[in-house]
Image (cartoon, rainbow, N blue to C red):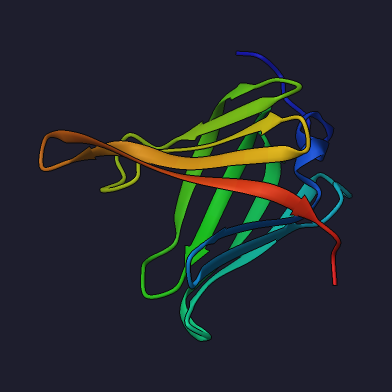
Length: 135
């Protein structure tokens, strides 16, 4: 096992936004402090809230735990499998969907994705973010 500390993913810190037509996705991450980072996000379409989520990212047993609390769904915990200067991937093989959550930094952009299988078929959803000034 590779020991991972929260500062390894400090590059998530800040405000991120993705737009497509009337759809706006926002995600905001706090700075790493006391072994944790917090995130809140929301998806809006035509000025209506579609969904929201908050995340607790924490150090635990030499890895990072991604504890997601999405709207209208049960909470789920994913454990880091990869954490580099530009990418982090979390996994929970027993979760229905997704089984994996990932973030990859690409310059001043961020690709967030969820993936896994649904009814035995592979599925992946990507959200390409760009950095924005936090409100």
